[in-house]
Image 1 (cartoon, one colour):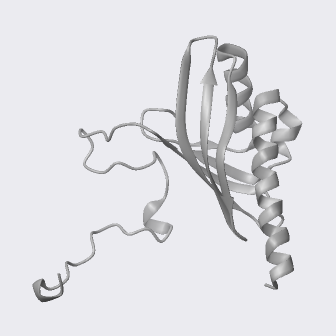
Image 2 (cartoon, one colour):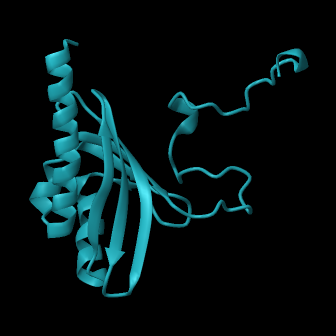
Length: 157
């Protein structure tokens, strides 16, 4: 991809993430929908709920959070390349006096719509689980390692 197109694509994906957060903060269903591909999936850590599948499910989640918790979100850091974006965020819940911090990874289709959102919360590891990973995320079919790599021979350590 030529450099000019790559910069434009990165900018387009970053703008989509910012529009998504604007839609969350404004509880604006149409703005949220404009960010999503059909079949978008939002994954969360175990015990949080989800995964949420589809535009309506994700929009309903954040619109209800604004109504019940007074939720407001900030993008604290954002990076994007030609295929994906990642952020650190803060989720303030003023009506119940909470704040959650975390990070998300976004994947996009060719048109620049979100196909997947993977949320990671800033929290301790759950030692009751042998594997700490997102609930419902298809690690085995998504090119993630499932077993530990072999150790290097002692002479190479």
